[in-house]
Length: 222
Image 1 (spheres, rainbow, N blue to C red):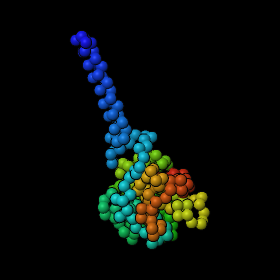
Image 2 (cartoon, one colour; image 1 turned 30 degrees about the horizontal axis):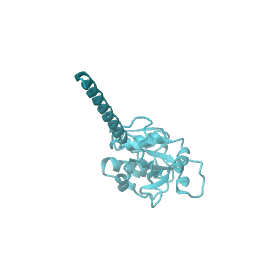
Image 3 (cartoon, rainbow, N blue to C red; image 1 turned 120 degrees about the vertical axis):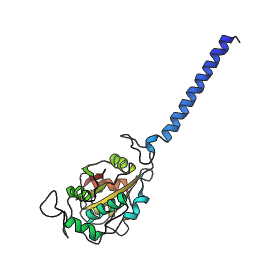
């Protein structure tokens, strides 16, 4: 083989090696891209699969409510605990809500026997120094929220997620979304309304039906 042909052959071999290495890097990158790391933002529409969020880390801040109408306050207390590691008691947070003016109606945010308005959750979070944004959400959005370490509170229908008789057409409950597992098809919740509500797991389809009753209302921290 001439020196020129040998050099050309070497260049072709080098190019093939480079392309093979690039292809391998692309596959490796797809399996574990930088945005898949915990706390990293994910691009819109990304679906790497598996668990979004950390339900196990959130579970210790769940508490069972003793008052029938303070699920909103208990959801906020749960989030405060997750953010600061120091969770107000039910008595403490209802006292704050009873003495904080509502931003959407006359009187305080909460009184016994009356549910807290969606629009007042942000005001109650703000009392504890937590910024939040109320909006109409989506499952994709919730996945990104919990993956990024945010603490979404959603309004939904309790009878649907508990599979209990009653009106399933109305929003009547607040819970904290702590994780979404796309591999098992389950949404993880801290749900103060039932005794086994710590890391409660609900099928995604059931959660979506329950959440739709509030027109997908969500308050997202941060």
